[in-house]
Image (cartoon, rainbow, N blue to C red; front, top):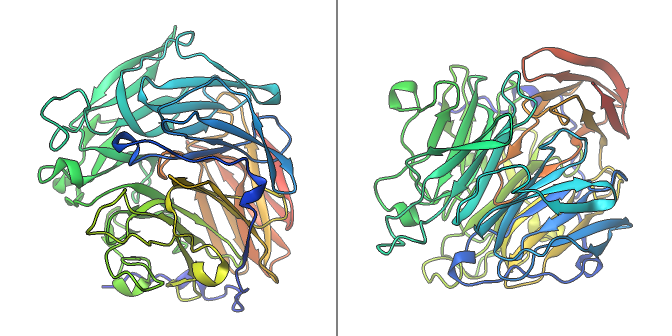
Length: 494
């Protein structure tokens, strides 16, 4: 039976703004994600404010080229700023590991991973050894982190792809993963396996409201024996069919998570080759595949001319026209020259409609790039209340698009600071207007090889104010007040 997708959306803004973007890629220093087969995957971008000026900056993976830091100068212009020289980088995730208020970077590599400590003026230094963080000479392609109750530092999960040291590889030689636990003098590593060639991880509340570790895996290399995984970090075990976790096998590449039905439970989008699988959260804690009519499967290039299946990578939800409904961006692109998959494979911008279905708008919006896209991010880079788009491409220059949608709805953004776990990872924000209720979890992980740490953006439609509730990881209400539209709210919860 089809889930009731539109219940909370009945009162949503009925008029839809014509979504539009301006290509401002020339405002970025040219950057290309390069490399041979070990960089067919990866190519992520981390979005963070690294100098405290309230403007999102970019750390871009380079593959065999050096990773680079682009600092936001305002006006959608970015400057190349020196960071420790790192090659072999597949992606990076921002988080405040040491709780000093400055965002750090966990950098994934083909080779030993690196942790960069952030500081004022976007100064980063390599503290991997100083913080005693265990690393292996692996091929890391996924990351997530969470703060268990009572912890002032995170548990970090590192997902690895093919075991490149196995002479029998690459097929059937998927590597295991590492769980990094904080201790008195650093971190200790525990192996998590079996691994099925993971390309995305996300620690978040699942449909039951329980913190779980979702792992998305690439069947291209595990072939037959693997499947998507869900790990319970408290019980320290993988869920099985007896737990209501059915076996699903796909070419898993990215994870996006957002409540689109208004029931407080996150739906999940899993990118793949061919179908992009959206799973609808159920009241009993399980998931069901969304009906095909929802319009999110994005199986083939929507521009026509190439009928072969698409290849999805980074996926991310965001309200692009501020109508109060979360939309969906999917970065697309052939792995390299796979003849069975589309070569001209444009990115998707799927706009959520009042009935909860999704309609393609990338072409008319100006986002239908034909480059081999990999990582991406949605963030308000110019502070005008509209989400912009950045995309990293394999063997093609990085792209930047400014959202210039006319007649968009109202908005607000919530920027939280707390003690210890300074960005309140594991908490959530609930925003209520006459149109309904929106919730977003505060997470580190998901996407494809990159994520962001910044204000949570909410479209408000025609509402001039909204009730904002901040819920801590333990379920406690930490903030509950009415706020005006059109501003970034900095909430100090220390």
